[in-house]
View 1 (cartoon, rainbow, N blue to C red):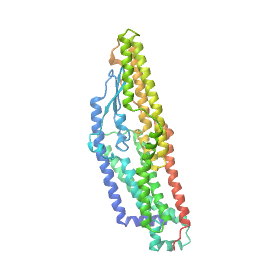
View 2: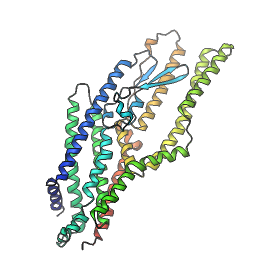
View 3: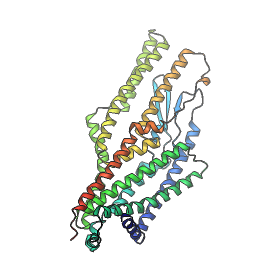
View 4: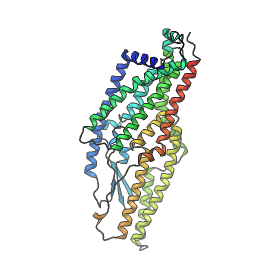
Length: 414
């Protein structure tokens, strides 16, 4: 019976203008996002080809990630130039976006389209699934037949989910296929798998908001009332709560500014230079001392920063949007965890160069290795948080549907 209800919902959507407007809107936004982000990626990749260090050059530069076209995250920060100097690691600007409009508005990547637009579309599909049929009088006729209410509700949910998911998958798949035809863009097999996981995570995200829409529809008598409530909830979940944790965490955890760290590194360097002028200590031991103190300074900063991030993420996970963004960016390799792993690798690279230079002062600098960063494997990414965030999102969708079922069982169709 649920299949018949699902087919009825799909047919009703296919015959409504709302469905075609939504599909056209999603297609235009996703196509525009792919076009803009592909140009941005190719521009940053061209910049990297110009500035990438050769063997013997004491600099670490990570190329832009192709998956940043879908979930940009912290890719610009990860693509900065980390220069190894006697003071420590000097951070220069990265391959910043060539599109200056990104400085004024959010980056229009695939993640943004799903996070903001598709969540609203899912609510628009679910907000009147129960109360509209009550107002039309059709719900009473349907329930007059010997069919369980749970079957009716599941059929409605499934029909609307399929109506959303199929066009979304087709449009996204077509866009990715077009991107793959560009010779300047290359996806590895691992990146294709990660992209498929991001797409599956996006469907879970859509399912969450569809379940929320049906729940509110089963709790209200009029479709207009549920629409107002859901718009308020959408603003709260998408825009307010994901930023609330960061504001609270900044008040609770004291993290020194980047400028303060730079000043401290300069003080360490100046002190060792003065000791050198006075003839106290040899240069090799002073370089090691500078490196060790800078590493300790960076380690203390990372401990404080990781505490800030952990608290912020814990609070932000109240909203499904935060969990979705955290999981998608980590899977894409542009998340907070990947950026932290990159910085640790840069520090190891710096220490290796210093040890090599001090061990063989007369060696040819061209023999020192160039920096190479290997992204964390997918199983490690999933184990370190992405699986939890995805599971939390799925559990939220199931819980909302269960609450909607309870509300529908008690719903008065008169």
